[in-house]
Amino acid sequence: MKSKSLNALRLAMLVACLGGFALSANADTPHPGPDHPGAKIYQKLCVDCHAENGEGVDGKADDPLYGNRDIPSLAGRIERTMPEDHEDLCVGEDARAVAEYIYDAFYSVEARARNTPARIDLTRLTVPQYRNSLADLIGNFRGGYGNPVPKERGLNAHYYGSRNHSAKKENNGKDKFEQVDSTLRFDFGEGTPKLPEGKEFPKEEFSIRWDGMILTEETGDYEFVIRTRNGVMLWVNEREDQESKTIDGWVAPNNEKREISGKTFLLGRRAYPIRLDFFKYKEKAAAVELLWKPPHGTLEPVPTRNLVPGWCHESFVVSTPFPADDRSVGYERGTAVSRAWLDAVTAGAIEAADYVGDHLDQLAGTKQDDPKREEKIRNFARRFTEIAFRRPLSAEEQAHFVDQRFEQGKSTEQRIRRLVLLTLTSPRFLYPGYSPSEEVDDFDVASRLALALWDSLPDQRLFEQARKGELSQPQQIESTARRMLDDARSRAKMRGFFHHWLELDRANDLDKDSKVFSEFNETVLADLRSSLFLFLDDIVWSEKSDYR
Image (cartoon, rainbow, N blue to C red; front, top):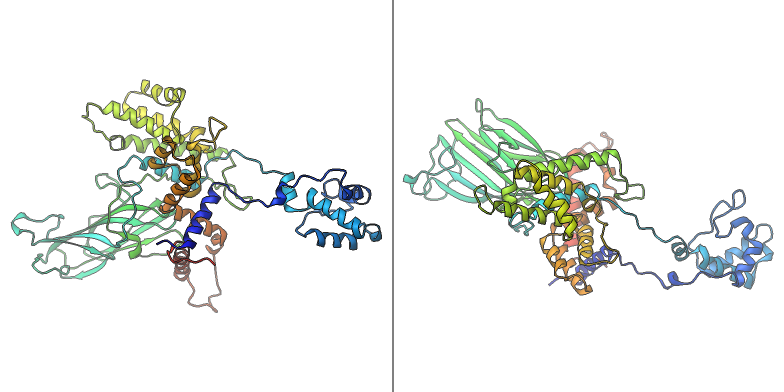
């Protein structure tokens, strides 16, 4: 049963994401008029130094009359200090009247909020929102995308008594077995893997294939390293039938232990497919170890907690570098539009268009010889654009973004590339606050929920809820938000909050006197960071969490 405190946290996140902020009763207090007794005294004794709205007059009162005192405290301050050099002119009931007037007119937080109401700015996607939105937009067209990650840890291990990852029929299964390995760190020496009862491997050759999912912690470049004496091949977030590999070390010279590395950019708190192929053939010794260097980390064996013996599709991760978002007000926001940002958006759209074109049949659920291939691809094009725009297409949008694209281009793949490029550079995708109507509808609610809780766009389920009108009631929205909070993307968003709140960027270059702290190094710093994240995850997401 979920604890009350956990439900309270989730409800608080829901309220925050919907922008529901409880204001005090004073926020609705009307601005005191000129007939207020305190207003007349203020005009006579105070306005020359403090100006009409307490903003101050240069050379007389440089600091504005803003603060957090209550009315009795403010009246006492006025009685003791104002007007300067004539403090006896405003005392007693007069000081109280002035305090009441300026408190409600401009002094208090509520008065300032009323006088300068928040302005709604049209903002673009931030860099994290853009990357997540592209990954999820394309991922939505793959079966099983977004399924919960299994709790079991480790990788599936397939052992074979031959060098080519296959068993011989005549051996009746004696030369193969499967298990889950919690870590990839093996030194077989001159022998074979530890064999279950009834299994037989030749000493001179064997092969192993590990596959499953790898869970990332933060967004950034991940360096993978394999230490081995033998032939290896590694795929991370790549299909095995593609020519590209994260690490290609299939040729092993001289049976000497060596390190081979590869680097790939991944989004944080997501699952990616991983596969490692290893073989020994007529070599004296065999050994293999898989390590990684995550962002802000050091080279280490991949922890068991980051390995899952499951399966998932590869994800599209845009690798285009983006300029940093504006943080002048203390947090990231998409308000700055520069030439560099426009160039990055265009490059990202081209990268996505090429990816969709290369994987078109898979994403559209068709194949080259399918008699309905053109129909299925047109349907994919419409759905792709709808999800990108976070709402169904109007007749004009259908004609411009979809129908006209299929009238141009020499091939279907080229037409789709043009459609993706046009869609991903459209303000309808880049500016999630855009709406064709001033009235808030279910699609607006779905978009806000996805952006607030996932830094992304609505998934298929959320989109269909909006289409059916199932996000119009508070109870429906709350139920949907609770479901979304169980998604790993919500945990990534929460970790981003702590990263900002605890100013962890300042710890990236942390240094200590080596004479005083002789054991402090990058490994200790990385362990402290991992320990902090594990602690925060336990505090926030544990079923027994108590925030009192």
